[in-house]
Length: 253
Image (cartoon, rainbow, N blue to C red; front, side, top):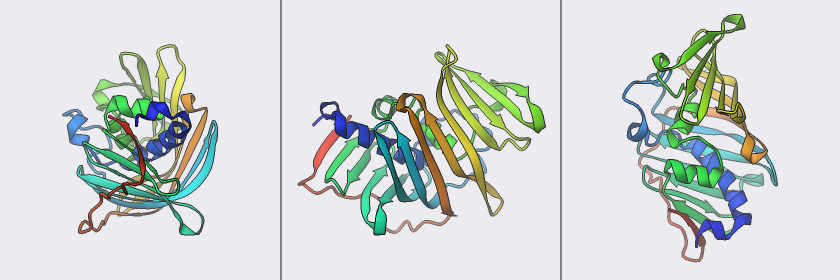
């Protein structure tokens, strides 16, 4: 069944897809990234195990959930969402070719291909998959020499990059730690605004701990807080999972 035939479920699962894309961040980097390394990316870990909380405050959708995410390099990743008393609400798996979200609580699933166009159609967020990857890790999207730079107060710097139909802005401190990201239209309309309010410092590695993402098309925000972070993942257990035959499946191929 096509997702467009069920708008009520689209509103719900597109938000879950948005969150899953934010967290399944280690995938497909080599497939779409530029040959020139972007600032802050080389030193970031390839293996991540994160636990935390997410709060959605979007139009027609307000809820909180606990999450656990495991990511290994550019191979595969899995995330699970839990409600009160540790009840499993849903889980998602992704690799370069396939994305699966299974709503365990309501017994339906979404499967598809995680391309740039499909992500936008599903989540209404104007970011590519690699954009999600780099922004989740607190890295800039482009090489420094491809952007304009401006000095601001308190030693901070503002970088900008103009694309075909957008302008991206990055506010960083003197160590290039990302503090804020904005994507605007050429008409100066804010499309996405992400605030990085706190960072982990694990073994000398800076990794964002708290994010607030404001999304114009979603009329609200998503707040994400990572409460524990480890750079060790058990890779002996398979990340992918099977969807029961009784489950209603929606596709976005």
